[in-house]
Amino acid sequence: MKYISFAVPCYNSESYMEHCIETLLVGKEDVEILLIDDGSTDKTAMIADRYAKKYPSIVKAIHKENGGHGSGVNVGLQNAQGLYYKVVDSDDWVDEKALKEVLKTIKKLEKEKKLVDMMIVNYVYEKGEEGCKRISYQKTLPMNKVFTWDEVGKFKKDAYLLMHSVIYQTKFLKSTGLKLPEHTFYVDNIFVYFPLPKIKTMYYLDVDFYRYFIGRVDQSVNESVMIKRIDQQLFVTKTMIDFFNPYDYWDSNKNCAKYLIHYIDIMMSVSTILLQVSKTKENDAKRKELWEYLKSKNPKLYKTCKISLSGLTTLPKWISIPGYRIAQKIYKFN
Image 1 (cartoon, rainbow, N blue to C red):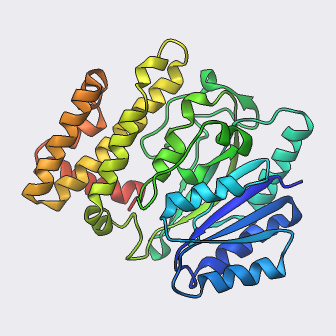
Image 2: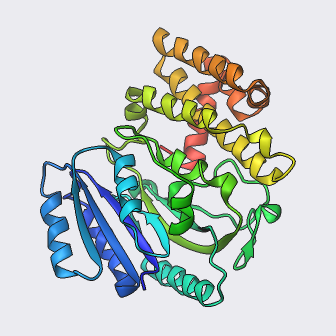
């Protein structure tokens, strides 16, 4: 049995993908590793084929036309055979000791017939000489037990759920109908956000599992790159606004509703401050249009965001931008 399917979307990843793969191979026959070559033009395809040949019962190389990160995640899910599905970007890696703990936990849950919809683990920002920033959920989530939304506490601003921290049950994720947009960056937010209202059971394992590398100049989360791709960030933000109204879940699942609102608040904050930082008339117009979009789609959510974190980003630039720089140093994002 394969307990975890690891999907590794790869695009021109020859210089770093092997490190990622080697950490996943620690799972041995308990895992399958899906190396998804997204139309690479370097030696990525050759490396993927080499690993598939060397580890035929563990590694599968999938070659496809270029469709972007979301396309790679979609194809990985279509091919996944493991009980759980985890996306690992090719420039990131996992902690080998933590991987063994995750597998041990999944086996225990499977034996007890208590498989949960979503597992949650810690992740670590790896920023080279700038050091590391550990993100955990010790004060937010019950540890080492199956729990529901009713037992979830308040998430800190710097410790919200990302693709790095979630491991979905494959059967559950497929049942949601999730399909990420192609040729679009930042769809990892959709990957986390879209399934949340359907989640019934969760399990938090307090291990530093995912190592999230930040530092490449061409990386999608590099600030200058994000500003250049701001239209894609705005597309993802608007798509999330369109999915559903968080307040529809308020009476039946209040903690989930609160987190959905929290997530939209974060997306509005990031989008708004990037438009502010760019200091162009065009992007200032886009900032105003984004807020008008939220107001027209969900007036109640608009009012909530206006008095929350994202509302602060609409303040004059001399206030909002210095605040953003301080937050960067504290939380080590971008």
